[in-house]
Length: 305
Image (cartoon, rainbow, N blue to C red; front, side, top):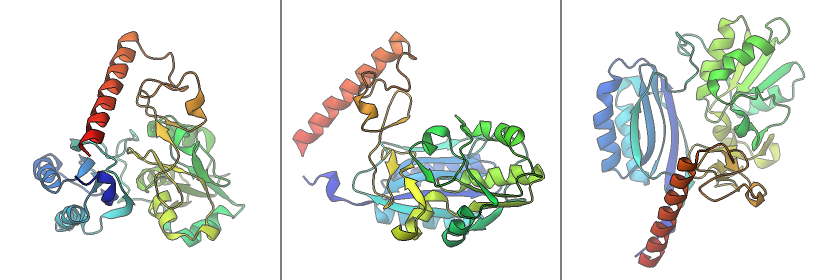
């Protein structure tokens, strides 16, 4: 039997803001198509559009993209590809949501008003412009494992906190030029919409996000530092978009480095220094049992291979 590591899978991160009045009806055929093509991952559907990260064989990914782009609403679907030797997801889900990325501000419409998208070359120029304030719109734990030099972190726990950061820390009269970035570009679309509605005039965002930047910029020109957190089993990717050095604490979903794993509070599948002491006894018991079951399944898989 051939092992999974002998197969190279495609990972696609995609999103598109577009009015989908029929988003509930879209779920069943989309889920059936993904399952039929051996795809794994999550797709979010909402009235405001689609967001998802999917992995699977090349042909399956192509079939999904063709299916979506056959709908005229998705002809300009934005997506980025990377590759991995193991599937970074365990199942396929299509979920219905209020927002495809949750900021919690009603009437946010990036299709109506959005900052200026800039490519990687111009992005480097903005990063080195002393008159530009560069903001990492991601959460604190994401910024902590990698970011662009000179970037400011809002120190948010969730994207819902971003509007409060803008309202309390930024001033349209003081911060005349603002450049923002995130993992794949989706959070910045909403973030720039919010800033411009608050009176900020010159607002930029990195087209395609960090992942597109890493894909297109030569190493000797890159201003990226560290690894990039991703929302799948790879946890983080390096500058080559290969799986990075971080693992994920199953209990709190935070990335943990090799040094973090030396902490006495780290127990594989159960806790890390971020969440130690924050879970109930029943929760801990359930986490330990889940880890035991996973280890048994891995041993059976090794025997089958």
